[in-house]
Image (spheres, rainbow, N blue to C red):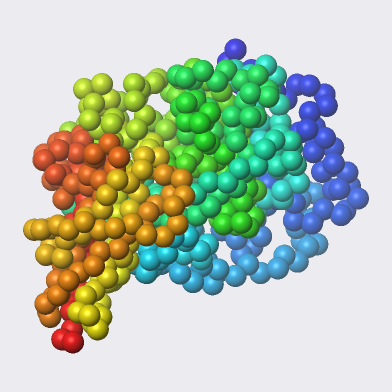
Length: 494
Ligand SMILES: Nc1nc2c(c(=O)[nH]1)N[C@H]1C(S)=C(S)[C@@H](COP(=O)(O)O)O[C@H]1N2
Ligand SMILES: [Mo]
């Protein structure tokens, strides 16, 4: 069955939830009571039917939009939409990289002094404008290797299955990209595209089991976002079934509150411990399959123009460790190991690692960059920060107060949650000398993998972490060298 046929068959039955939504929407339209109906989705992930359609005038406009129907235009002019506060007004703790699409990171290192990152300080990474979605109109379709293809309403997702919470350190794979030399393209994230929050939602495993999906190891759940403007690649990731069945959620709640639109309202995928890109926002389709999305079948259907990669772009071309010498990443149907660090150890089998499970990393929150600090009455300075290693636990953190020459052990403090949330650390710096110092932190995970010192040069052409160097790569992904996050501070005379 081709992908197109599968989509068509998922729309075929006369009384699907989607049909009921359409009927209700039509009714509301006719009765004139529809006000700012959000994106009409649950459309089996098609690109032919508009997704990011009705945005108000203040909201970012997609680069290309489907023609609005007469009815929609009338409805829009009749309804005065309330003005949306700007990104900066909504998130005072963020440094804005681009207002449209919204990209912003934590502005201060002080964000990394707390266990839970408040919403106002959690980074935002969008490839396309944030869609304006009406929860009651939204559906997530389940297609592919399942007993019956269906559309799930938000009500069913929330109420028909169990509810679970998990702490997850989410980091954009591009965090630290600005430290690559020579510079690579894309948003120049420094340290701030990472945050630790509590996510609540439905275990995807329960949904898959209930609808008779193929859930054996080796299969994939390909998950798609519904916000791409017409003609743009669908934000799609293929998540290995082992991980899906282990702890992946369809999350609708962040830090105990409903998701903000920017973070994926009404529902996003939450892949604990894995790089941000896997955590698809505004999910509208989940497709069970034997391989990752790859090849023509996933590029042509629905591709409005030549050169469009539709479903494969964000899985196969982007989010890969591509050294200077490669023209592009090698595409695979499956790989023998998913952990990103382990992929980078097996570069004979996996030429360009995929950004899945996050690599070990840490950041100092205090003292901050260029900060002048005064020792305590007993003559010490407490260095604090956080460390994480994807879905592996952090084993230890060391701190250097002389730019990496010598190291001392830090100790953990603060709440202990799942391994997928970060750990807070403190290091008591005894008898700091007045003057300037360079501080660094180095995390080691439970498998013994430690942060390297530096980023390699492109000429090194390395594909994994070698000789204490993180591989320079064309996309600037996965950076975790401790020197790039070192802070310079000045100790004052007591
Ligand atoms: N549909 C969709 N999902 C998406 C993205 C996107 O652009 N579209 N960006 C991804 C990337 S690259 C990251 S790092 C995280 C960011 O999540 P946040 O904005 O909630 O921090 O969302 C991921 N999910
Ligand atoms: Mo990202």
